[in-house]
Length: 304
Image (cartoon, rainbow, N blue to C red; front, side, top):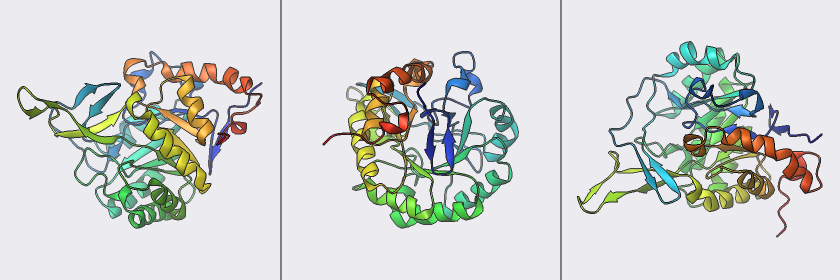
């Protein structure tokens, strides 16, 4: 029997395969396609303090080996999430990791405190410090001091709830930000959020996205995300949840070997809602093929 369980600080998961925020709705939409009991966890869509209409359309565009999105955190607000979505999420047989985004440091802290009050059914809270599609969205995770301060203050109001800091790749040195999150008391970091990019219609000489720029995700960013995860893992300061271009068993194994403790499958959910389950089903055989009996034995075993 292969042991797939993994531990990220105070957070323990039955297996290392989660689905990423913004790609899985609030889970109910995926119920016809996914056996939730097989997943390590679900990260529902990011919520903000107040409802947001999001950016003007078009909001998505396909690119070579990926997609650009500029949704703009369209959601009905934190209270609506706690009242209407969390009750359903609590019933699912897997770990639920809430995801919040604030306009300011103080708003992050206030939201974290409110989540902590209603934390029943939540296994952890992911702090979206890095959405590139809203005004000021990447400001938090490009500044190590701000990252550390937000995490520390959220930790103070969430003393017993595991915290995950979601980091942007749009920085010079992501390891500095990861270390800041660790110093602030995060249990893990998610690396990476999307890369800022754009697409244009040269015939019309106009940008395709209504927001002009958007976040690039999908297979195109995997090599970049892989390097970021590898570099953070080398710090040995904080567990890493890998995000970015993960769709297949081989992708998952690549990230585990370079040092990810867990992974989140994102864009693949749009074209194959069963991608995460397929990976979980195939994972034991892949681990066994390396002569290991647990997923923990292969994490960070890259030979250089």
